[in-house]
Image (cartoon, rainbow, N blue to C red; front, side, top):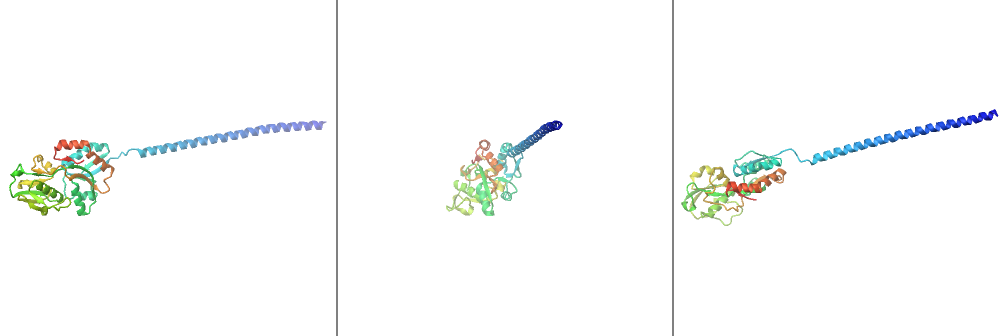
Length: 310
């Protein structure tokens, strides 16, 4: 009997112990699981934060890339004083609003200007018409191109001695530019005025006195560098010069003896090295010079001595 009682007590004790141990194990398991979940949740949160930060950085970089450039662009150029530099100065505020500054490093054209554009010493030049530049390219294996027509300066004949063609005497001395294209222009207006007749077989836009077929009225023609003509004008009965040279010298350009028609093909251009004509700043410069504001400025200021070519 005692043995049975003891056996019963032992079984009861074992059951109690087992139940107690089972409860403890479950709680431990639950705690571990909770800890693991918490850690996982924290890890997820951390990953999400990192992802958001990366996205924010990418957005910032994209915004910086898309932002308009803040650095100013400087174009180094050459431009004759009148009307070229005056036109550049007129559009400078417009270009400044586009972040473009013009730095003119010369305002008295000479034979080296085309070379300076060709060699990349300057970004552009504004002083010549396209046939003149073509002549340079052909003679010097140049690579200059026309970025845009801006204006025409009709070449004209002036005199300090006479006020009409009828007054010009026989054997009058006439000085004309000696570069091929401007000499041709001078000879054309002499022909138009009745002094000479040119050969019929002329080709291109160039000629010299050797291309004169007949002197309708006896005159003496002297060829001289265009930059020197104004300085010796008093030695001649007639002097033929480009309008810009006359304007710079203070000559009243409305008092010409005869001049080129306004449909002249000799438009003054913005010349650049081949490949530069599509540069952002060059295109903006041409766009500004071809604006309606510039057209009005030319018409109001030069009274027909300079004509818009756009």
